[in-house]
Length: 204
Figure 1 (cartoon, rainbow, N blue to C red):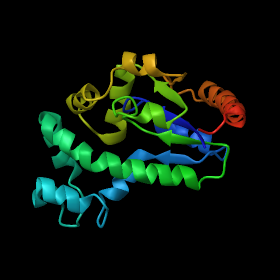
Figure 2 (figure 1 turned 30 degrees about the vertical axis):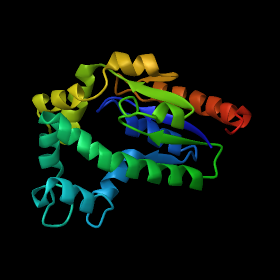
Figure 3 (figure 1 turned 90 degrees about the horizontal axis):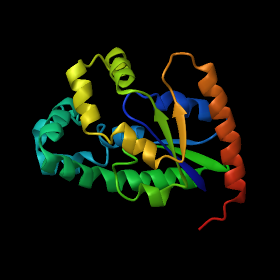
Figure 4 (figure 1 turned 180 degrees about the vertical axis):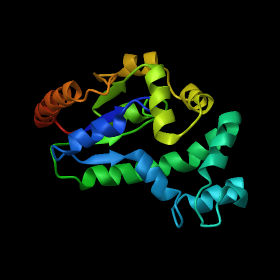
């Protein structure tokens, strides 16, 4: 299936964009949601995380203690690599399964770390980047999640830079204001373009 990889920095508006494509009947495969299911109670990643990092990173309910893990991986590069070694293969398997289950001409795969994680360029046909300024990211995340400015800045520092994302993009949606109509119009045009590309792309 023709697949579009949707990415953007934290707080850029990826969910808003994905929901707009979903309104056209486009299947949305969200790797964040997959990761959350895998780190919920009974999730496939929980036993592996517990073996590698210990029970202190698992809550009494059997879920990943995300705040504790976030704090660890932000200050420990090796721990981050080890967590990724557990999560990324599981996410890739589930992502492929979800994409193949779809029957639409194309699918949107929402991957916050699309640029940072190896092999995504080979696994999607186009990169779609939702772009906004760093200050807009910080404002959106502080309002949405209640994080401090310092916490948001730490997350942004662990993501690809805005310039790196834009350089890798095939398509760009600027989402800088709260006025959504221009964004929705651009999404409509991109949807029509992707339908055409999917129709004329020969499967590999």
